[in-house]
Length: 311
Image (cartoon, rainbow, N blue to C red; front, side, top):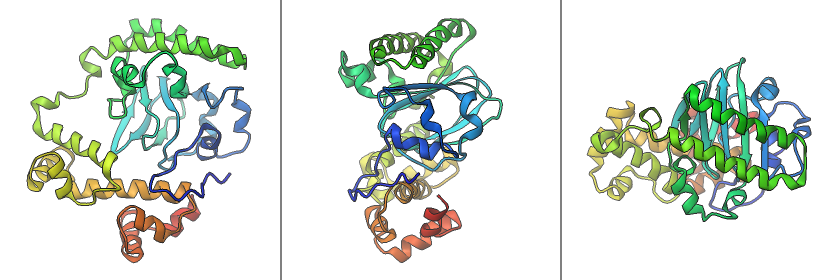
């Protein structure tokens, strides 16, 4: 299936659930999993689809929020520039429009994948209120929620009810999905109040704090800002100090992270659009196609054209 769009905007396109399957699965027939409200809500067991999934997936964005809940096994998933190892008894939340990809999933995986349209929950909530109530749904929020055995006994019936209701393939299940999702998130919110689900306290570590702020800024402004000095100015620190912070935390330079973000955006544009290599070079700031081609080959070992053909 060709998931590319002919749209030629200055934004990376986002995949709808209807087009996402062609990116995720290596064989046809995945549409048989779809219920009548697939674009609004969907849930499936990971063990049902693991053997027909593509890994690593190319970087992409999508129009829906999703979460993966692993009950057995593990996986590696990337959100923006941060790579996460996701163990058992852990939820991974991914907001809509966030660039991401799944790198690996163990063969013995068990658990659930679920996606839903934001409007499913914002019918009775303002989007900002929803994100304030459940920080793991925030675009820049910490995506992992690990639960203990006690909370697992509360959570599993909720997830199982979502799954069994979805299998009925009824149009009138929307309100049930909304109620159970909000109940699930309320239970998970309790887990985020404890240390193991709280990201490092950046206020007590300036290097960590500035590195995360830099990553966040790259995700938001990569099309407008192409120099480390511009981000340093945005964060009100010197380029040299920013580089020292990033180096101390990641072992990479600030320029390395900026180039990684450019590369991620380029790979999404190559995989999801029919933009020419020259147009992509212009959109992401490497305005000379030859320079962009050399940059891409140095990072990937293949040319942009070869990457598109492989994908």
